[in-house]
Image (cartoon, rainbow, N blue to C red; front, side, top):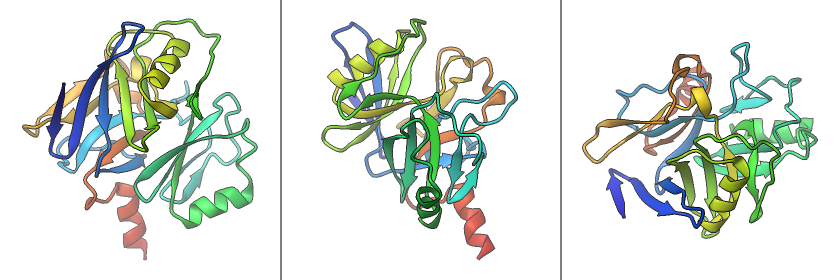
Length: 233
C-alpha cells in the first residue's frame, strides 16, 4: 500500500522478521541537514527527523558541517563509524574509517562544495548489515540508499535490535543505511496529502532538547543555512 502526499511518497513493508516498516521516499525532494528547528508552518518541509546524536551536555555528537561550515573539528566520534554527506540535495552514506577520512583535504573539498555532514552508525554498508553487541529494543529509523538508487527513510513500527534492523533493511533493498537519533529524542513529523503535519516517533519525551534535523524539502526552498550564505554574499 502507498500514498503520495504532494511529492512525498509513503509506503509500507513487512520484513520476514515480522517487523512492519513505513518508508518515506525522497523522490524529487531535496535532502538537507539543518541546525535550526524546521517550522511546521513551513510548507516546503515534507519530512523532518533528528539525525546525529545529541550529547548529554546538549551538543551535537561528533564532527559536523552545515552548508559548508565546519563545526566540532576536533571532536570526531570514533564510535560512530559512518557519516551522512549531503551535497546538492542528495545524501550519501560513507564509512569514516574510525574518523581517519576527516583529513584537511577531505573537509576542505566538502566545504568548497557547501556540503553538509553528520556522524552516525552505518547499519548497512555495501549491502552488508552491521552487527552490534547492543541488544536493547528500540523503535528504529535510518536513511537508506536502495540498490536502485532511491533514497528512503525507514521507520520501524515496533522496537527491535540494531542488528535485526540492519538485516531487515538489507532484505527490503538497502545497499547503504545510516542510523538516526531515536529513543527520547525521536520525535519527527511529515506532511500528508491534506497538508496536515503528522508526528512520528513513539517516545517524544526530549523533543525540546533536539539539536539537529534531517529534512526532505521541496526543491525550490532554501534551508536556513543556505539563506544565511546567500545574504552574506
